[in-house]
Image (cartoon, rainbow, N blue to C red; front, side):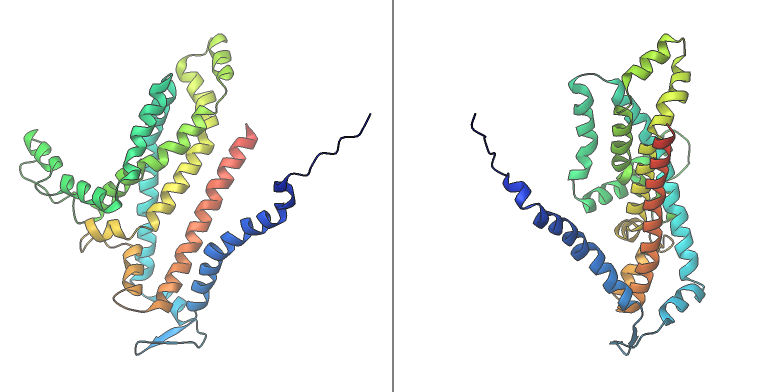
Length: 290
């Protein structure tokens, strides 16, 4: 019997090149810009010109100035609140989607994802028109007799930033939670029902613990997106709604102090990396323990 020699697939021959490209792209487009920012953070500005002499003055200014560090911590607290509210609103929506059968499940999921296809600026303008003095929310509250006259509580302040970011980022929380819920083996739920557990007991002992990795991913995702947003605070925050993102924007824009802006970006990048690592670790540990 003659021996048949199979040709080696082209994908295998080119696998080293694919591997190099897979590592090169993140290095070029992620690590290299971060390295440049890190280097720039040790420069300074003198009369509008960047001085390429290493100094830690930017970091000293960040930690000692009475303005930047409080705004930094307030922004972190704001974004943690946004993440918490988004999870509380997204979990019931994702859970409801998993209870549907057939095409309705994914049809409604696509409807929830439609806002992601819209322009970010248009969505902010739409939300601002709802929260404004003559917006739908104030008119509804006045019509119901809850308030006597339109209130500025919902626009051009930190409350407006909180509400707007939450509304914008809820879809990013729904999807990870939905995927985590959908991956729960149905046999576990049926076994719990056969053993006499109530729906609440099944949810608390099986569904909720197994979906926590998705919750952790959603929380870290929303937090990272919120803390890096400067456009939303700029458009709905007003004078009193000042966040760390707006400070970064001003340093690279009107102030033209790129070294100090780079130092602030490094501080923000550290928080983002920590949030991602914590979310990934929480999800991995929860998945391993189950």
